[in-house]
Length: 356
Image (cartoon, rainbow, N blue to C red; front, side, top):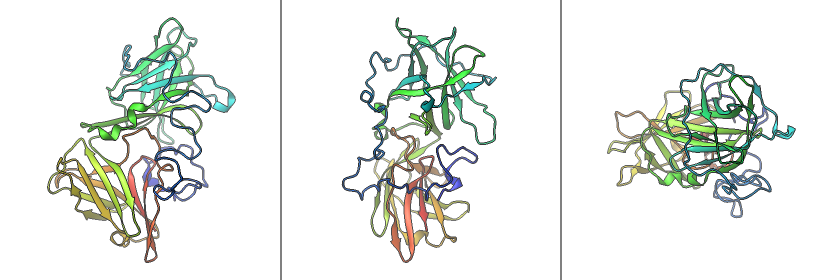
C-alpha cells in the first residue's frame, strides 16, 4: 500500500506507477535477514553497484577525475529564478550530457563536466517543486576550467545548506540560454558508505547524488535539527527490535520512544534502553502493542524524544550512500492472532511500522 504520509504532501513520486504493489513489498525484492544467498545489504538485486555504470569502470575510478575538495568559486546565492527553458533529452534518446561527481566526508560535492559550448557555463541545481507548484529555489555554481583538456569543475560547498528534498542538476551554457539536464557519469560515494559511524552536529545535513528513475542526475538532501539513525532492525516471530543512534542531540534520563499513529493524535510511548554515551539507544515493540489503532491498515511513525520538553526526533536511515531505501530494505512481517506487523522505510527513508 502506498501511504500519502510517507512523503511531503504534493511531492511527485519518482518512478511510481499506479499499479505499484503493496507499499514496501516489491516483487523480487529481497527480505533482509531471511534470504541466505541474497545480495549484501543495500544492494539492489540484479542492479549495478552504486556509482558503477554498466560495463563501465569500477566505482569512484575516474581517469583524470576531480581532486576531492578542490574548490573553485562558491555558489552564487540569492538567485532569482528567472527560469530558463529546459532541454531534457531522455537517456534512451541518446543525450550525451554527463557529469561525474565525488562527495567528500564533509558533504562537499565536486562535479566534473566534459567540454561544452557556451561562453559562461554554470551548473544549475533546482529543488524539485511539489506537484502543481512552480519552482522557487535554484542554486547556481560556477564551472571553472580543469586543466588544458577543456573539462570543467563546479563545487557545491557544505554551506549554505540545501533545503530538504530532491534537486535536479542541469547545465546552463550561458545566462539566458536553454538549460540542459545532465545524466550521471561516475559517482564516487565511498565517503558515505560508513557515514553512520560518525557523530553529526546539529543541524544534521545529508546529501546523496543519485540517478533518477528516468536516468538523470539528482541530489537527495535532508536537513534536520536532529536525527536518529536506525542501525539495525531485528525481526523475530514475536517482536521487532530497533537499534539506533541520536545525532545533533543527547538522550536524557526521561527520554522516550514515541510511535505515532499516522493521521491521528494516538501515540504509544516506550522506554528505550540507552547507552552510556547518551547517543545510542534501542527499543522493542510487538504486534499486541500496536494492534488496537482502529482501521484495516495502520501505519505508526517512529520518533525519539531526547527529554520530556524536547521536540520529537524522527527515526530513519539517512547516513550512507542509499538515496532511496524503501524497496531495497524489505523486512518480513510478524504474524500473530490474525494481524501482521512489518517495519519499513518510507520514501523519505524514515522508519515506519505497518499493522494489518
